[in-house]
Image (cartoon, rainbow, N blue to C red; front, side):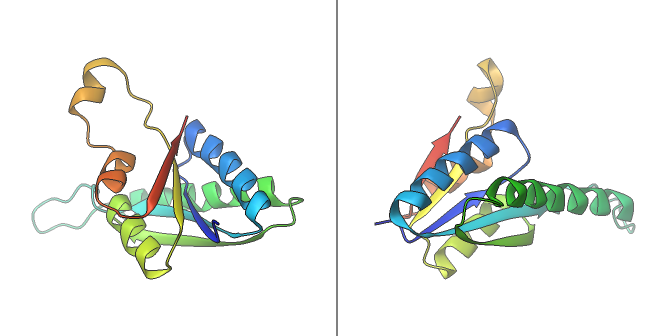
Length: 141
């Protein structure tokens, strides 16, 4: 039985496919849904002695908040137990840390939308999470 399902949202179309799949699973098991979005502060450009542009950080935060708002709209009439979580840092690390600390039963993420050579050489968040967790992971897309 899946009591807690974490859905990692990055705004991509496959992350909303993942949300829809998680909704179906949650409805079947009457579980709890956790909607997570992570503001990726790891890759912000930093110059020697100068911090990153605060507008860029604000834009990233706004994007993450919009991802969560859209997910909440999708859930509006579903009558499910859910809550949202907005974190800052490396998305893969934050997903792993949070899911372990909350004893999540399943992590649901959208598949990376890469093709060809880019797929061979990329280190996607979904791939990293699936390789570094003992929690069941479902990639949708």
